[in-house]
Amino acid sequence: MLTHNDLTVSNAVEVFKETRDTGVTCVGFKDTGLSLEEQRTLVGLMRRKGKTIFFEVVSENKEAAMRSIKNAIALKIDYLIGSTYIEQTLRLLKGRITFMPYVGKVAGHPCMLRGKIEEIIADAKRAEGLGVAGINLLAYRYDGDADQLIESVKKAVTIPIIVAGSINSFERIRKVAEIGMWGFTVGGAIFERKFAPEGDLRDQVTAVIEYVKKFKRNKPFQ
Image 1 (cartoon, rainbow, N blue to C red):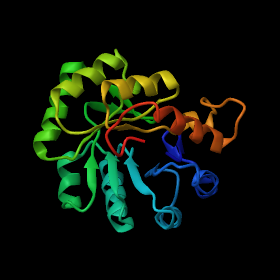
Image 2 (image 1 turned 90 degrees about the vertical axis):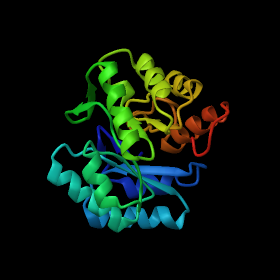
Image 3 (image 1 turned 45 degrees about the vertical axis):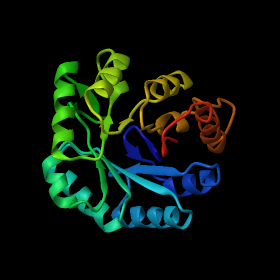
Image 4 (image 1 turned 180 degrees about the vertical axis):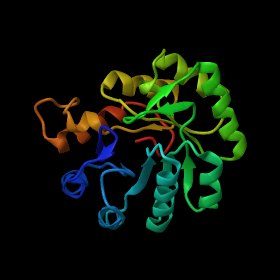
C-alpha cells in the first residue's frame, strides 16, 4: 500500500516507480490523500505494469465514502477494500469490483477496530451473508487479542480474509500466514523502514516479498 497513517502518500507516483520492479504484483492506495486526477495517473501507471490494484475506503463520513466508491468504479479498480457501508456499497458496485469490507465497529483516523470478538464475528457472518467476496480485518488495530480475533473470524466464515493495518514486523506476517489468511496489507512499515532498517523503499518491499516466499499460500497472497 502506497500509504502512511491511512493516507496515500503525496509522492505515491514516485514511490510506485521506485518499487514497481521488485516483483510485487498487488499494489494499493487509500481514498484519502490524492485528488481524483492524481489517482487516475497512479492507476494508469499500475495498469501499464500489470499490477492488481487495491483501493481502500477509509472515509468515515457516508457521503465521502460513497463518492470514493463511485471514483473506484470510474477508475476500474480490481479490489475495493474497507468501507463500513456494506449494503450501500454492494448496490453501487453491482458486481463490477471485488468487494472486501471492514467488519466490526471501525472508528477514527487512522482507522481502529473496536468491540467484542463475538460482535465482530457476527458482523463478519452478516457480511458473508450479504454476498461480499471477502473481509478486510483490522486485526492489529484492535484493542484486544489480535491473534485470537484473527483465528476466531477465520473459523467463523468461509470467505477470504485480508489482515489490514499495522503489519509492521516479520512476526506479524508469519502469524497471518500460518493462520491461513488470504492476504495482508503493508504500508506504513515500508515508509518507516521496519523490514530493512538500512535499506531504501525498494529494499523494504523486497524484504517482505522474500519473507513471504517461505510460506505456502493461496494465490494471490503476496
